[in-house]
Length: 286
Image (cartoon, rainbow, N blue to C red; front, side, top):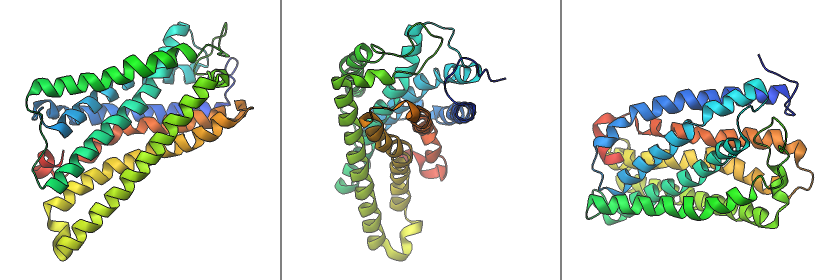
């Protein structure tokens, strides 16, 4: 039963957040389980390597989702403040790492489309591992320490049994600027990817006409389109609202909406379900 005595968030929003994160947890576990066979794929492929990294990002995030469900169910945070910050930051790391790997997947597939080659590959598996570690290092060792230092420095949660309430940190100019920059990058790149994907689909249709829906190239591009749709649906609403949210001096009343849209970003964990279907060509579509 929900506890309403300690949490400032209205009960209806907490019910909604519990429902959303429960769907993400169940759907994400199913999605990751169904795609475990990718571990046996050609790991020298650029897109397969990116997909494997994406799966790891989703798994790490899903490990923190039960703690979010627990918090919204009971209304209080009985664990340490440091762990609250880790759980809170994990969803932001998930957004940005997933976004990077989506871009790598799509750019790799677009280059393959124009080069008319079957796939792009690293010269050696070790190169794929090194490239993956480089991406993780850039995000985790450069961006996250800055965010960890700033987020929570002006937290409303000090001395309280609350969590995920770091709105006061946005009073810091560097945090505001970082939010604006990251949100704008995600919005611009996502819209560019969407426009480019539409152009490619139109090109495929003009090329094959009546045979379009029976041609493998069309279905391969539909897999790419699914990733683009995930980016648009999951990331665009939150980042559009985030720009408005950060710009407001009195943003406390907007916190529940911000949390709902933040929860929507986690539905990207279901993206691997888009690779299911037409199994005879799944390897070529990854």
